[in-house]
Length: 315
Image (tube, rainbow, N blue to C red; front, side):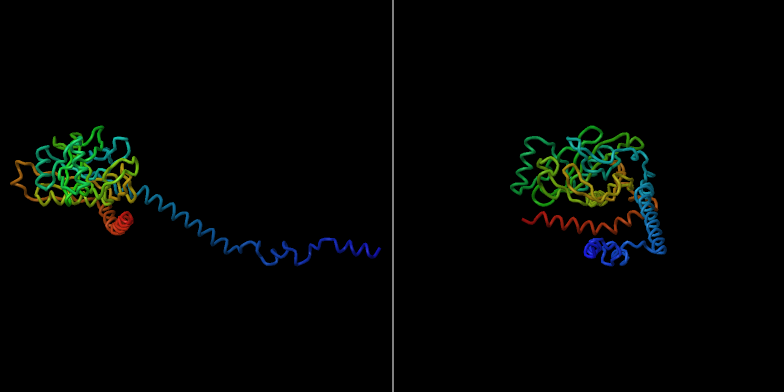
């Protein structure tokens, strides 16, 4: 009898033993609730962070973009398209430049600035540009591929040759618009980019030029050429595609931009000798602040673009 009771006691689970895992966890405090003071601090921290996150989202995606949108110098551009399209309907290069002038004034201004009209795309010119790229031969009037705006391909295209072949070049496409003009003078709105290489489109696999990421540099370069040629009477900016850090065109090429369209009033041919000088129009304070921010981060983007180019060139 004694032996049976002893065995029974030995088999009974000892729930009060400190070796019990559940009791050990409680004893060491692994499931002990946080002190009220610490809990209040954490709740307040989460609350403050939530407010800061919400404020940043509203500021970055609502308030600042509204402040940075401006069309005070040419309201007609507010509802205008901001990008071109490829023949497949893919979003192409953003619009970043435009000129007010007659066709004669526009063509004369581009020629005086050192830019040449691009040849139309034909079998003959296509073979010629292929020969230029493959055999390293000059072709300063090489054709450009078609992009579309207002339901049609570009009305005119100009380029400025770089080096001894058509692999690298400055180029711009333009569309004439009477609706976006002013005082009966049409606007030649366009997209200026720099062709840095020839390769396959990242989207369609077709042979194409790849553009340099900094599309503002090409816009600014063309404006400088026109100002140097004394063909600009007035200069101002309006909002285009908007500030973009990671844009991609119809060929899948990365680009970044301050998102502005620079518009120039060209000197009329019959007044070229009487030009009194360039008149730049001032942007609103909020846009000037945005431009300062952009100029601060632009060198970082240039470094990233340079590193990407070096990686592409490695075997």
